[in-house]
Length: 283
Image 1: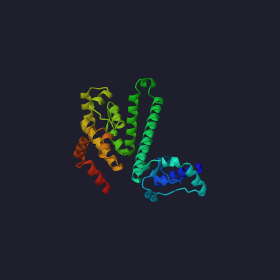
Image 2: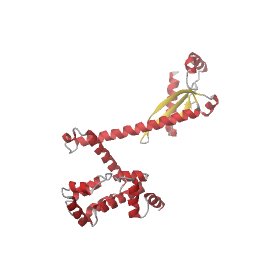
Image 3: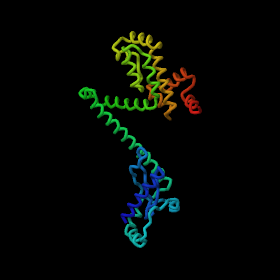
Image 4: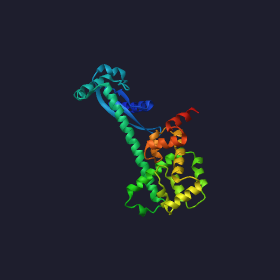
């Protein structure tokens, strides 16, 4: 009978991947089983099998498919009689309860898979950073801080993949002063960070007052206005190219509060981010 159990698991898993959702079915002994597909990048990795329950209402079994049947009925009945005591001990659940549990397991599986992928990516990025030009000795004692930096790099890379390259380069070409170059590079390489003029002055190794005067001379705008306009341009790209929620766009671009982001966006574009996205999609 083991081969029939294996067939049930195999066919249940295949049906789950075909439907791309949990598949509830009857095994060859009319026991309820569930197959939950595990899919990564549209590739079927496997399935988690659960079940071994009976339906509290026998009539509900009519809506389930028995995916494997035994050709030797006499042998099947004999085995069932031998295992009758165990069969009677199987828990009884309603079909609705089985569906609820199947969906819960599916969500849990997806969460675990996504978390595993994210942690694996962070680990790879961390190992890569240790092999880079950064002195590995400087990282000793600061693993948490380094992982946070890796997360920021990943976030920035995701944003970069959606932001039009031309809009990223135009701002850099405006500047002539090499003194400001470290600040500009930092802004473009850390799009998800809430950046202040004071921090940028420190990066450029000048006083905040001198930095502010030089920045306005080079760009024609105050640092805060320049940065806000630049981030709004990036926000427009994300609103056009992704399905990110407005709150997510705000967070990815380093705004402290989504309400403030919406206010700044409307100030420069005349409409809220949501209205901008709707208008853009109609074009």
